[in-house]
Image (spheres, rainbow, N blue to C red):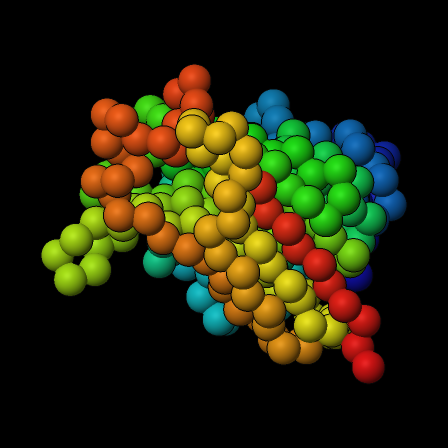
Length: 271
């Protein structure tokens, strides 16, 4: 009710009450977003209130991925999420958790996959730490996903780096691809994996995964890994290659300085 009154006050006066507490500011942003009062949203996040809005939101949600705020944050509109991400780096467990939260929030707020992809690519992912979204290029006409990774980017993953693709959709479920360098028994490996984004309430049948890599010898895709997961099972699927083999001077994995990978994702209907 207070947020609605503040919104009405703004619509008549063009101003908000000074020294608004952070929870009310978030509610005003949500109300302005709901009733499409663009001028109020812009006023909260631009001009004289830009620093104040970001300070309020960033301070209030400084532990913004803690369990305490999860449900509340999922209700925050796009403008509020942008303000939080635009502030100095939110205090959180890892860059991966920021990325995962952004994907879950977008999936919750934008059920339409085309609209969601547009919001993610133009409004949100540019605000996520660059190392998590940099340079995995995707093309997915159906349930086949083709992507490339530059050799320089792969080289920069050593010794324990990670990059992720933008999300892609397959038959109502959302996925992303990650590439990383990991250590096991004092040896370094290059890992490729397909990851499903959590979708609350969603159900699905068995999923068949296949990962293929193009080699320089044949210029054709060679299967590196196959796996089928049971119904309604969220599981990371992937394969690995010794780092020394991948990055060798005579490596067969890079063609014109790029690693070419093709992923098949086939979701069967439940019996």
